[in-house]
Structure formats: structure tokens, C-alpha cells
Picture (cartoon, rainbow over the protein chains, first blue to last red):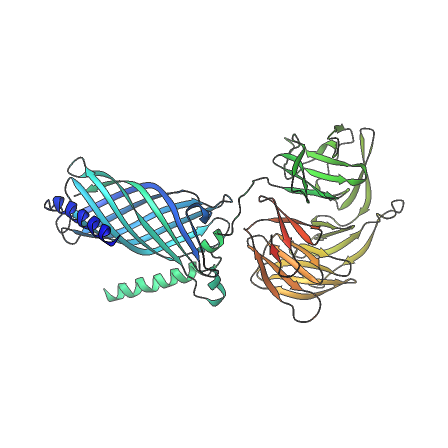
Amino acid sequence: MRKKILVLCLLVCMTFSLFAANKYYDNGSQRFTISAGVDFPLSITRFADNTTKTFFDTKLSLGGYGSICYQLNVSPQIALGCEIGYMFNFVIDGKLVTNVPIIAKATWLPVQGTIDIPISLGAGICYLSLSDGGSYLPFYVSAEIGLQYYFTENWGIGVNTGVWMIPEIYFSSAAKEKNAFATFLPATLMVTYRQ
Amino acid sequence: MKKYMLLLFILLVALLTSCNLDNQGIFAEVLDRVPSDNRRISLIGRSGDFVYFSSVNGIESYNLVSGVYTTIDGSAEAKKSNRFILDIDNNQIIYFIESANSITPKYDEYYSININTKEKKSLDGSANTDIFCGAFDKYLINKNGDVVSTSIDDNIITFTKKASVLENPRFVKNIDDILVYTTSASGIPDTSSLVYYYFDDSTNPSTPSTLRSIVKPESDLGNLRSVAKDASTTVLIFSKTNEGTSFYKLEGNTLTKIYSISTVYQKDFASFIDNGNLYYAYDGSSNFYKLSLNGGPISSTTISKISTVSIIGYFKVGDNYKICTTNNGFFTLSVSGTPTIL
């Protein structure tokens, strides 16, 4: 099994290196991305009774996500910036869970040019609320990978996926039974303008 | 630069603190949710194993034992303002439809439907322009504070005033043969609720019903939200802005506070008493609570979790209770041993 993963990683790196010769970005290059798509609930873990539910057993529906992201290259391969988004999922009883992540995002661009493969890590907070329940401001972490095709010098379209992690941790002892950890898988289309 | 970083940090801490005061638990809560049937149930009453209610499907019944729903009248409008009376003696539901396009709401369409044969009749009667504020079993209470009974002879419905009370009744609930309501006397702000009790003379219909008990609290208790009663105890639940919710035991005409929750101010409570314990839930919470009423320390315990639902009624079935909710149907609650939703 380990050998197979190693070979796969090697193949991915080799693929990257095929494109990596083309450097497009410089220090100061800018990327502005608009994304829209769906999000799948991956898992919810409630620590109080050690319950983990996955996919639609989480009682959440397939949801939607939209975001805007601005990034500035600090090196030819690394871009830093921020993203704000809006995500929603319906609960099985018809109520709405909404989530507004506000995150700092670092992107590594090992492949760039006509084809970009952005690999990003994001961290920040999100405003999480339930339409008939409470609201909370937990931390938010994301790890994403995308594939973009630039049909002009500046404009590109692509797809993006990854995993979002939301630890809903309460600090007061009275609320500790509500501690939970949720993950989501996004699948979005994105349009990027770069210069 | 350091100043800005510090400012940003303080802002972030303030933001986290302010948003996180509302500790409801979102993902932990979501796992307990149950599917909604979106029926928008309003209860009419219970007869034997059947509970009757109006919903988006019209007038329906629910068999508490078999769990089967049956539509009695699919054409009956489930408008919240319409009023329904369950006339158990004559196996019928009488209902009053609020007139459309009327500036002053009035009820001048009357129907009856037999709950067994499903035979429906349109009734004649003098138009009643009073706004019915509530219906309970076989009585209506109108905006003038009159308790009105109905009788049907052939197809003619007649309203008979049974008792007069003060104007503007605000909370109406019937438990067994007791009607409980609050009213605000003219000139007193809405929050100054006075509590009145109306005891029905159902055991002796030939005697005009009278007000048997009037409770006038010395101070403003807030709004009456729920009443629970068994053979020996009556508990009233009040919510008051900025003060939370308080539970009072009624002994004679005296109200004695037995418990209070300063953090909860809610509009809808559902409560009942079983074997010396008060069980209650309130809108916006996914918990049931149990409060011991048999002396000793009073404890409130989370006994079981279901989704956040508006619980609108409890019905005892054997050793268990069936809980009726607005949009999630019926649940079975066991209160023997550790209370649980089955």
C-alpha cells in the first residue's frame, strides 16, 4: 500500500515538473478569483458521546458555496491573500446552516502558465449559524487543490476541491458537551483574473 | 505596525467573545435532527386512541397506538386563525372559518364533520363578528372575554354565552375541564398579566358555569406560557422579559414560586406532570427537562434530545407519552426509569 502511495506521489511530482519549467508569476503578481459550486458534508464528530456521522448521515444536505479571493505573489510560486465565502447546507428538518468563512490563504503554484495547479492552505474564522438555533464563530481551516486553464493571458477557468475543517469548540464547561468537529468537501468552478 | 496588530488582535478577541456567547451548539445539535413533515399541525383534541388536528392536509386524525394518520376532511383549511371544536359526545368536529377579505376578522362560515362517517355539513347560524381568540374542547372564548358554547340542532348552530370575564384574554389553555387564561385590565401594560381561572361545570350542564377561582398575583409575573396539572398539583409557567422564566405552584388562590431560570425567556412551553415530576420543553431548545415537585431539592435535568421542534401537546398512552410537534409529527417519550425519546 505504502509503495503504491509513494509511486503515486512520484508521478504527481513528475507531472508537476513537466509544467514547472514555465514560470508565469513574479513577485507582485496578483490573482483575483471568484468561485461557485457545491459542498458535500463529509463528517461530523460530536465528542460528548464520541459519535461520528459521515456524508448524509450528518443530517446535512448537499450545499452550495461561493467565494471571492484575492492573492498577491510573494515569490514566483507562492501567493498570499484572503478569501471570504458563503456556504449553506440544509438540515434534514428543513432548517438552514450557513457559514461565512473569512480566511487567510497561502497558495503554492508548482505548475503555472497556461495551466495552473494551485495548492492552497487557508486558516481563519467563520461565522456559523443555524436558522432556528444559535450562532458561533469557530476557527476554520482549509486545504485545497485546483486545476485552471488560462484561455487568454489574464483570464482562466478551472475547478477546485479539497477539504474544509471546522472545529466547533466551546470553552465554557457548561457547553463542552456541544463540542464537535465537522469536515466538508467543496467542488467548485472558478474564474480567475491575473496580472 | 505593532499598534495595528494589537488593535486587530483585540478586535478579533472581542468578535470571538461576542459571537460565542450564544452557545447553542450547531453541529452537535444537527446530528439529533429528525425529518420535518411540514404539516403545520394545530391540535383540536383527543378522543380515545385518536388525536385530531388541523394541518396543511386539512383535518386529520392520528392513532396514538398504531401511528396511522387518516384524513377526515381534506378540504378544511388549516389557516391558523380558523377555530375547531371537538364535540366528543356527538362524534363531530365543528369548525369556524374566518371570512376572507374582511377588514375586521369574523367567523361566519360554520361546518361540522362526523369523525367516523366523514359526513360533512354546512351549518347555518347568525354571523358572529366577535374575534374568537381560542377554542377548547366544546367552548370558544371571544375577544370580549365571553366563554361561548355551541349547540347544533339540524343544521343550525347556536352560540350560548356561558360566562363573562374581562376583556382581551391573552393565553387560553384547557386542561381536563379547566380553562386557564390571563387578561390585561384596561390601562395596565401588556406585561402586567392577571391570572384568571374558569372552572367548567361540565358535570352539571343545567347549572350555568361560573368563575370558580380568580388568582390575582400581587406583582407582575410576566406572560403565562404554560399550565400543567395532575390530580393534586397545578403548575403555571411564566416568562418575563429580562427576568427569564419562573415556575409557580398554585395552591388555593396562592401562587408560590418553585423554580426559575433566569437565562430563558421563551414564548412556547409545553409541560405536563407525571408522578410528582414536571416535564417541560420550550421552543428553541432540543432538550426535555424534568423538575421534581415532591419536596426536596428541585433539579432540572436534560433527559433526552430531539430536534428543536415546537411541541404542542402531550398524550398519555399506557406508561408512555406521545408528544405532538408542529412539523415533526409524533414522538414517544418514556418517563419510566430514565426518560427517553423512544
